[in-house]
Amino acid sequence: MIFLLLTAALIICGFTLGWFDGSALLQKLADTQDDIRSYVDANLFTAVVIASAIYIGLSTIAFPFSVLVSICIATVFPYYLAVVFVTISATIGATCGMLLSRYLFRDMLRRWFGKKFERFDEVWQRDGIWFLASMRLAPYVPFFTINVFSGLTNMKVRAFFWVTIIAILPATMVNLFVGSQLPPLREIANKGIPSLLTWELIAALSILAVMPLAIRFGILQRNPPS
Image (cartoon, rainbow, N blue to C red; front, side, top):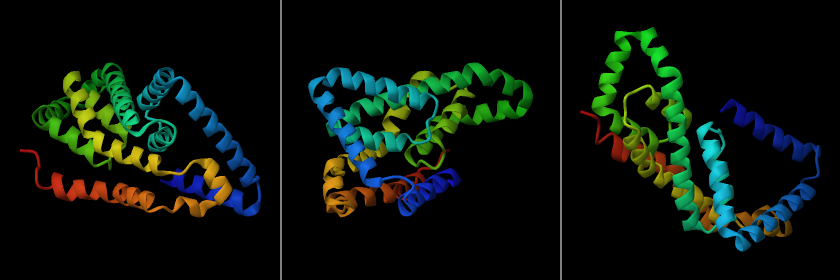
């Protein structure tokens, strides 16, 4: 959170104090977006493969701005296609991260914590599916932490994969919907920031803000683990 606030403050200061030419930067980004869109239109399959590979890599290393990447993807790919390959790619990356944790850290932590770790593993084997689903649905726990945490247990890879792909789907759809409602950067460059304020985008951002709370208090509290 501190890093995000500092980054936002730096960007605002840059525009306010004239550290860089915001109009020229926006025009350059608009040109880049137009080029990417043209490439996607002409080479859809190749573009999906490239974007999927990048997203798998970012998900494996738990890149902290994956939501922003998802939104950017939705600005150049068809919405429903993006939902499919982003969800699959994020799940594959999360599974790779979980396996790395399992084979690098689990034995070491078992030796360190002894019986306490056995107790933790016992609880996770009983309610692990619910814990994993709840953390994925209500994104209060960082993505990387969930992957590492699950890798320390004996949870089956197949169960981890399918719970993850189902549980992240709602948030992925909302994130991509936000991106799909953003106007092209060329339009923003020509008409200014007010062109962003459409009712579709406002509705998408409202859903994005309310969804974690709705899941937290509407679903998870009513269905606690046994």
